[in-house]
Length: 195
Image (tube, rainbow, N blue to C red; front, side):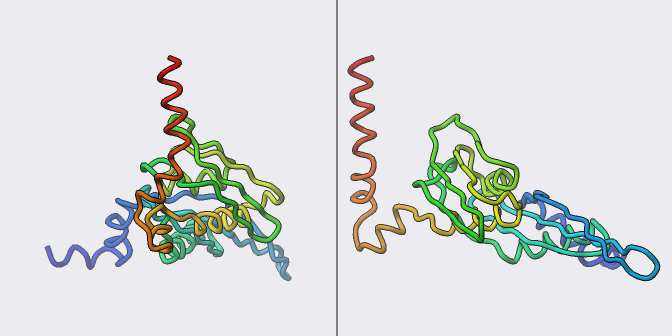
């Protein structure tokens, strides 16, 4: 039994345990050519998003001469750069938020149950890996995948849960939530009397 790990590479032994709880999505792959004396030399750049579908997510970019190696480098970088995102009811955001990066701007809005992920390609990959199920988004400006992903991460970093706000203001969570949920409670009460 002790010999078995030696026959495989160290990464092969470590990989499945890390991958078991992490989802990774390839957002984009770009082929670049360098013209040299003998012709063209191709390289590949990959953008990968990694998350545990429970509020942790990260992104990474990797470059290599071969596609699998570029994806591996990007995945490793994404695992190192993970952030925690506060999620409401394990399905949506606590509040609407905007994010910017370069020429990219994204608007993320909380959505009621059953809405699904209404988002473009690069942003969809981020929300699927972080574990958000209901969200409405709009991307304004650039459609460059790198800038869209970075703008989305900028927005996610700005998210604050009621617990974080309560701690900052020195109040209790129910005081913060009481104000926010009061209009919704009124609407539900009116709906039940009308129905």
